[in-house]
Image 1 (cartoon, rainbow, N blue to C red):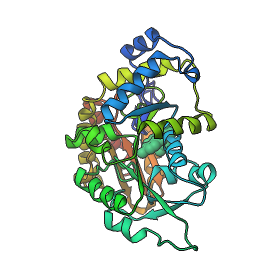
Image 2 (image 1 turned 180 degrees about the vertical axis):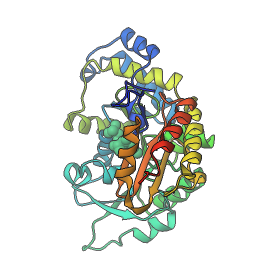
Image 3 (image 1 turned 180 degrees about the horizontal axis):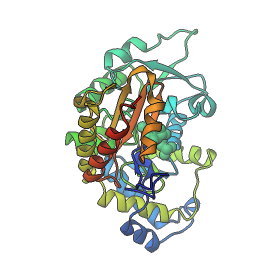
Length: 353
Ligand code: TLP
């Protein structure tokens, strides 16, 4: 549970996002103890340690610490493409939907939307979307895979699904980027290692500030040459940080201590989904909840109303469409919190009168 609650005086159970977590005591100690230097001069030993560790986990030659997942994705897109190129993304992808139009603004590329199954598309979809070499068309350059898929309700790409897309992309001469903001969750859910997934991609972005509970930070990994070029774009986008070791220390702590516990978040999300699925007017198949994100529909496009009712009893979720709500479990949410949240929700939903 989190901070003190609303008018009801209840403790708030905040399920809006796994980005809401605050550093734990252990993490704060690691931050306090961090050795730092000026990272734009390449002199922050803790940032260097983090970059080495991330490259090792992902089985890539190099990695670069960046302030956010959005910057990591957009630096990757900029590094892979030229203005006028086209990139293939699922129509629900964070890079296209929630990064403020950055592919167009920062890289001058077009997004060609694929209609996947809860964020997951196939090699055949990629093949069908590619443009023939013709002066009329933008060159198709890059495919972006989001694993887990946020708007897909935390859906996980299996390794076979990834390999199908990757093999097709390679045959067609396309580059591949993975938005792995929640790759950690995909790995815990499937037992596939981060490196096995990453091996299929030219570049991979991972976040420390989602399920892993660090306050700030993401990393972009790839070949040494790719990361060397990406460092210029990170600077161009304003992402060169100075004594960033205090943030890197939190990320290192999170990698060490908060990865395996994600299975608790997944169990809590499943518990929440089972409870919500029994409520009148809620459309949710609990079998679709694979990780820490629960997305469901509220009949009559009443998402805003549902979220407002919950707020009165100190439970927070996010309306992500007129009839669609998202709840996310994380480090500060226990099984007891989920039981308590369900009890409170039953008090206000369905609305009486
Ligand atoms: N997602 C946030 C919001 O922006 C929607 C959230 O609450 O889930 N990739 C994926 C798949 C993400 O879900 C997010 C953040 C990002 C990238 C961007 O990360 P940041 O917020 O660090 O720029």
